[in-house]
Image (cartoon, rainbow, N blue to C red; front, side):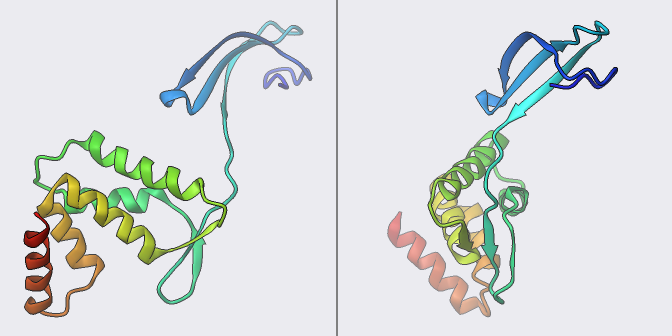
Length: 151
């Protein structure tokens, strides 16, 4: 690792420790030339995962969009933020574990709804009403009846 202070081409690792549940390695380093110490972070870089939108456009996968949608659905509900983060991490891990590096938004939405149904039924209905774009009260009622049958 090149020293950011004197541009020496090497450095010595003094300490390494995992952070973020082992997803990132923090390394404390020292330059043998100038003696300055600095910290680096090592993280796995994934191949890009592309999301195919309803209109056919493609964009890079952004877990923050899933997080925002779930947070909105869970607003004023007794759902711990850690549970929401866990859902997002599960979905991302599942998607990145696939061979295919493209996924449709519909599939992501179904994955979110499946997990929300188990976590909080009200949050599930809120998310489903936006995701499935209920056009009228009848569609909303049908979804509620289906949920009640499953419970």
